[in-house]
Image (cartoon, rainbow, N blue to C red; front, top):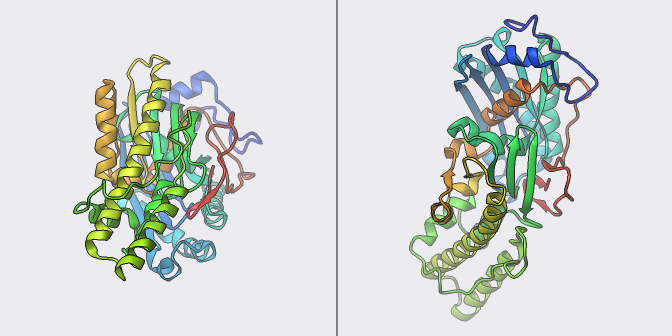
Length: 393
């Protein structure tokens, strides 16, 4: 392995996480590292190459994402079997394209990071098997990465946030408040007990005959709507803690739509805009109130450089982002949101999470398994429910 022949790295160990000696880790910190990342947890097939220079500067040399929207459009959601077959077909090409775009060859790769869960098991398995083959063939270390850790660590890649920081991960499959303490250390303060907010946006769009993905479509329609016309519920705000629920909100919206259709013989464009605006306001209120509670818990720990980050596709919603940004300004807390291309599923975040774990001495061997569920915080009970993008972690 170029540059690492004498670092003391233990490969193919039975343990999932085997720390190197302090001296070996110190040498890694002064070496250039080139990491290949592979992501296939849902309906995006992705590969990326990331490089960390000896001075700590980290660059995304390439990031290739191949979507599957056309394959699933007629089914109203992601079909696991179709997604798995598409990953198996496209993964090799994504890796080749990522290497070409980065201007490197396989021999330049120092380690291989791959999403090992949570997600749709067929897709995760496709990525893990490819990564294992590359690891065995090249003799390079293998790092299995939690997909959610990839999202949670992205603000360190884009903004250099120091540990610990507060994170809201809000996407089509997940919604959690996390205190991020290290590359493999997370404290979950709360999360959705049913639908994720992105899933609720997508279902709202389908109920209102808006195009997919639902988030941008609902947000655009809401621009001309009245957010106060319909009194939609704000679930769980009357209960303490940071857990959330969006399933009842979606049901209330369905009933409101049906009432309008029955009373007016159809749904006018203005009605659709008002429903979207009212729905968006309800989601925003829930996330903001719960974020206030999470922020209070986080600030009670007196972090040296308090920061709040959001990631996931829902973070692109400007109304939600503005509300959370104002909340952070109120508490004099740094607010950050990675670029949208790094908030949705991608392999650059997996490569970065793998790099942090690689430097910390984490390694996997050929016993690495694909996991449909994989909670970041293993000290608390798992979240219940299952979204359109896989089981909740």
